Image 1 (tube, rainbow, N blue to C red):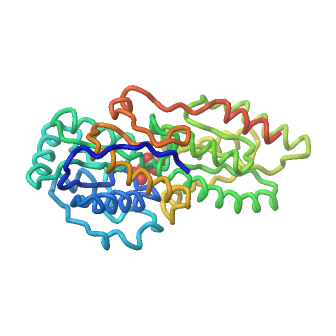
Image 2 (cartoon, rainbow, N blue to C red; image 1 turned 60 degrees about the vertical axis):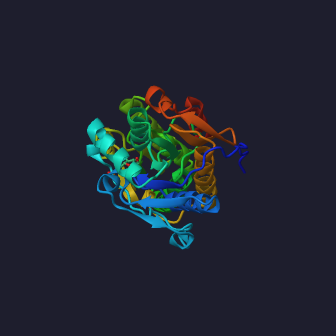
Image 3 (cartoon, rainbow, N blue to C red; image 1 turned 135 degrees about the horizontal axis):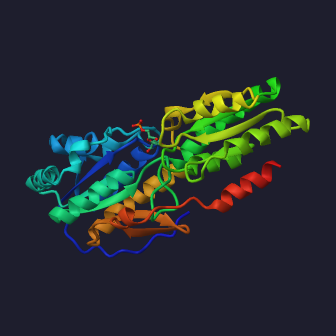
Amino acid sequence: MYELPVLEPKLPLKALAVMTSGGDAPGMNAAIRGVVRTALNHGIEVYGIKRGFSGLLEDDMQLLDSQSVSNIVQRGGTFLKSDRCEAFKQPEVRAKTAQILRQKSIDGLVVIGGDGSLTGAHLLEEETGFATIGIPGTIDNDIFGSDDTIGFDTAVNTALDAIDRIRDTAHSHERHFLVEVMGRNSGFIATHVGIAAGAEMIVVPEHALDLEALSLQLASSRVAGHGSSGIIVVAEGKIPGLTGRLAEQLRIHGQKPHVCILGHIQRGGSPTGHDRVLASCLGAMAVKYLLAGYSDIMVGVRDGRIVDTPLDDLLRYRKGLDPELLNIALQLHR
Ligand code: F6P
């Protein structure tokens, strides 16, 4: 459970808007519900914006009532839908969206999304003075200022379930499997899944890949007569096709790995209890921060406490993957 800050309501907010933006993540619906019901309990109207910043630009939003968010806490995806909006990278487009929000007498905007979306929320505030609050929603868990992000726990468990099944076949046929998980820029999913699945090796974008060492390690475990099957978890990385190329090179070194790309199944599905609680608390607290007069911050979780981080910190700092976690993974499979 989280330790929650006590915030005094200071602003008489009339209306706020909420959107989900970027890649969807399980738990986003629970976060929207948290925002909507908390706002309504404080007598604040809530507009639900469709398709993130793209919908905002087209003034595609509707007033939500308590009923609009019933029966969604358990659903994956986002009922408001989501988008990656290229146009929002232009300052004049951001100015137009602030106008749209002000015309409707909306006092604040809650953005639930990843790095790019929260950076958009920061720029909107910085350039137009429109109050924004961010909530970290991405399966990647790569957001500075929060130990955890909405969807990460569900994605890890979904990938883990798949790998447990793959391991049955790997063991029966004495084969190695390269299992690709999501994570273009970060290896959080790969590392957590790798540890939980007892993977023989974990490949993450944060560390250079030593193919030679990898091949030798696989070969020696075969020769030693143990570990003739195994799971190597590979984060997808920036360049598409990494896992296929890795398999190709391992074949050159005499290995016969199978490749399994888990892909978007990791983004869907019913959120875990952990993600539902996290999302509900962050959604509720986002409204309380707005009421207390905060803006241009992200509401996240650190050391078990709900905390705020200036949104521009996300531009300046990167959340690093603890190398010790990878060491633990390596030590445990020996
Ligand atoms: O940011 C979340 C994420 O799922 C990444 O892990 C992945 O690289 C990317 O989105 C995929 O995005 P898209 O669905 O737009 O291809």
